Length: 290
Image (tube, rainbow, N blue to C red; front, side, top):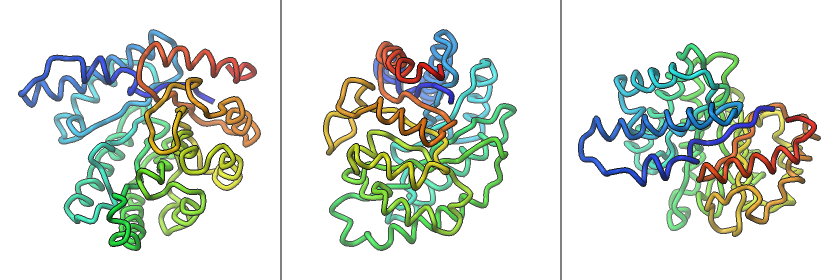
């Protein structure tokens, strides 16, 4: 197993606590600086890797990708990617929004695959639906999802790289959240090309602690990436630091060991100090590995 953290840890100081700009180039530079600071933090604190969140400004065009590649090439620490998700929705009812979302994923996957050091895991979201639209859009979500899966499955990437759909908090996204629903869509045509990212908070929202064992029983061969996130409520996803909520992480670690998990563990919540504290807790529970 590798133990890393998400660049979410530094988003406050790199994105929210900086002087606001109205120049496109300076705007992109803020996001690139976020990537750089995350990699610097990862190297300085000897993490195994960093999961970099790539949002719109740095996947918008070839020039931005080129500048991102230059930043990545300046470091030796391994990295994974989390593809854009804030405004991304591959099952949106609007055809133009679906197309733009799929295109962002296509470009991110292709960029990752072409790097001299491709990431081990690239995480993408399966989409979301507003609750009030479920009556109208409900049956169509599967149609849109299968179309997106088959299109993305047509991209080539190296065998060393996994493209992972992340389980969602069903009470928020209304899609790809319950074990039953994930099982249905993970057997759809084209999905055999993909792996999965397990988010502990998302699963807890949908299934509670009793859902972790059946989840691993069904999906452990597909899971290559795990987002370690705590929670304090079952109706939202505030990205509570590991150990500060109600999720039983020692039990989850035991499940991972029993399942023979040999993938990536990502501490995914804000705050660099909190990230380091969570790592110490995890090292205690994983003391025979780290």
